[in-house]
Image (cartoon, rainbow, N blue to C red; front, side, top):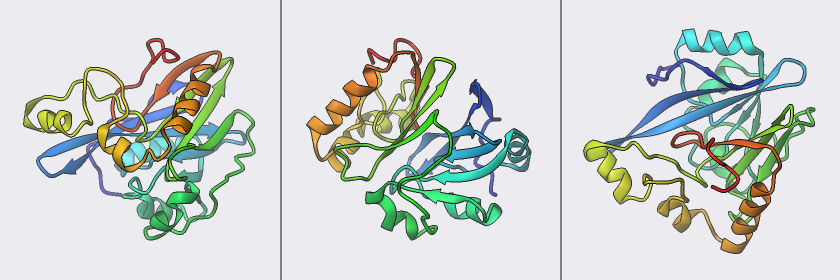
Length: 223
């Protein structure tokens, strides 16, 4: 796979790994995060896959066997084909509303995966016409919420590219639903709000991992 200058995989929690990279866009770079969750049976679920160099791929393979490739919405399919080529046994997962678009890049096996692990739950986010997914991962009383585009947390944007990210509504001074996401993804605001409140009620919510921006670990329930 082609390297996108991603950093090494880092441990987020027990059996939760993440790696950061960047997507080149006109006049700017958009930070990206891939999350890897270790399932029962030493299997791995790869969320929002990005291309990695061979050293980082070896690190990932040492953590377990890639079993699921989760494409969390229509726009995060860029590197899915390369991952499926490397691991033909991968079960490709996408939310129902994104299935057709994702299938243009890689065949989708399911929109309602059975991970055979009670501590990992796949969610199609209400109010998004089935186009956006999320994960909850429980570890010893702690819960990690994995979101995709629904919430962004890009706060350190600088230079002209940073100005562009702020002008487009991707970056800001706090975690937020980016303006383009509100316009294109959120179709039922009340349904999205209700889901956000349900996540806020999770006892032991330790962090929120987003695809674009820093992890949210300071009072994530309030955020």
